[in-house]
Length: 226
Image 1 (tube, rainbow, N blue to C red):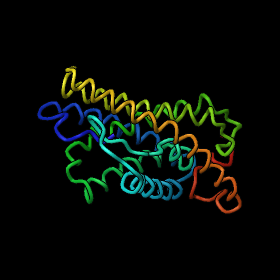
Image 2 (image 1 turned 45 degrees about the vertical axis):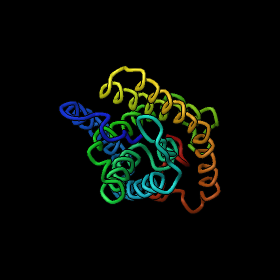
Image 3 (image 1 turned 90 degrees about the vertical axis):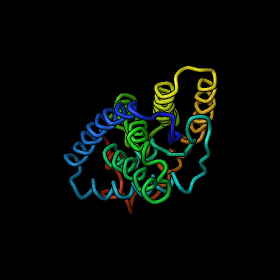
Image 4 (image 1 turned 135 degrees about the horizontal axis):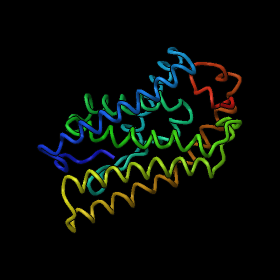
């Protein structure tokens, strides 16, 4: 989901500042909700863990350029379920920034674009989770269908934002249309993997309930109803 350098350039980058500001508002709202519910220590602990996880997903897991962007196995819905929406937002923004500062400086000019692409779909996933996962259901009991819905919403949101930036920056020429289509097709393959990763991680969390339950390390909702 890293937009390639040069796709959006010049004065058009001003829009990215505005969307990143809106993303910051979304992230701040999610963070404040976590702090009110679980306290600042839990929020900070999970945010650090989420940032480490995102950085590892970006740098260690396979990633490759396709069309106008790169395909990454971000596991956004997994991070959301395990750490909660607020820490997930901080983790996505922080992991992306660390990667740009120390490993991919050519991505820094696109930071506002990329952080928008990551955070706005997370906000949608947070709303969707409230609708499709009953309040009495802890996340360790999430079904495959529910995990698939969350993953599809997150990855679909990323594809939609990448397409928006590509068309905004480069127009609707045949080559750009083909590049967006190839990226979208490749990226949605992640949906085949992410729900299984969600369930595998939640199964591991369920096994470790005696160690993790009630700690600041994971989202309270992993083991408890809302």
